[in-house]
Length: 468
Ligand code: MN
Ligand code: MN
Image (cartoon, rainbow, N blue to C red; front, side):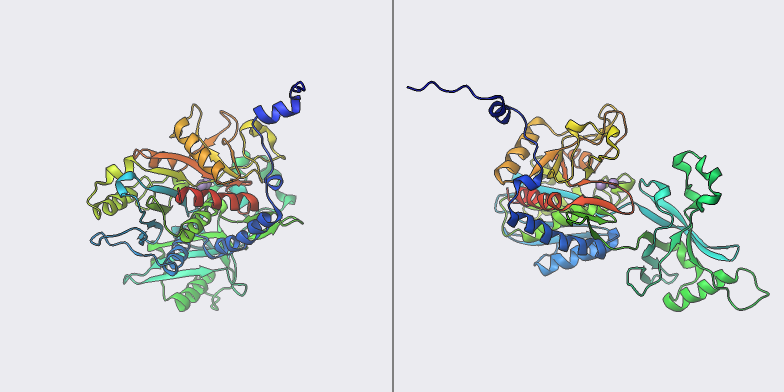
């Protein structure tokens, strides 16, 4: 009998070490094609849904086309029924009733549909030295210097004195005008360069240029403002006071594009977290029938800390689950206590140009697959829900069993910074929760980067979870 050869170091390493492989080494040509195709729809979503309100409209329309109907707490539901609930035109919950009793818990997937941007102040319109402006107050964590000299579009609603509401979208159609914030020319920037970098552009300097043509009357003052107000009055029937009850948001006006000669990456505004919103939405809309009731949350206000009645620190999710449970004669808390959640939010992709802030063994990378983040927070894990080993194990087995390409990640080196997601607020409802999302490079910049393989892997992960 031949003596059994001792394994080589290479064989032993393959057996014993964690294998980290680029998604392209793990996918067939046919699968790579699927990633590319999936991202065509994704880019359309990015262009059509640049704000939480537009995302809500998009989601509602797509859900209705797939047979979802408004949730009615006085109705009874059976397996396969599909319902949705819209919270104040800024958040949506979709649910597919499962075959198992609802007291066994539901599978929640939660992404957010708000992104960092420039909001108009309540009294935004002014003229300075014969240029017309809107005053802004930035929303979410932005590097302010990134926002000047970027073409901006304007989105939102204006509620007039009589209560009628107008929807505004200017700057998305190729024939529309756009807007922008100015910056100093380098020739005159020597004093600006000496400012601390977080003040290179200050909050009160994020003023959006909206016009320069004066009203024809040489004796009047504020003629540019007057001409602009006349145009706005003609187009929308508004007066200056109507801005007081408006929500107008400026976002980059450009469209999502492929990046690279190989077209392997997606560049676009608001991929945090619309990349998870879209992948989650597609997973739910494609689901045929589910064992456990599936609940997809697409929420607002994550970028400002999840407060407010459309954010996940509010009770709207808890109330929805309670109302849904009640249609089966079950208490909401029993459902929540047996539920599991993938908090679908992005993580910071390792950036080879800025390696110092990452701890490479625990950073997610582009083309490494969907990222599973056990904990977020800052300093000593402050503000994290920190998923249990048991739940991580469960998710790990699920993703492996379905052939989902995945990796893990942590938001930068310890004590370098940090951040949070909605995971903690859902976990606080006694739900097993973990962050699962797409690595993003240049996060919170006007033009963010994702990899097509990771986007598709996120879709596969949410699909596997919803159907488990
Ligand atoms: Mn996010
Ligand atoms: Mn964010």
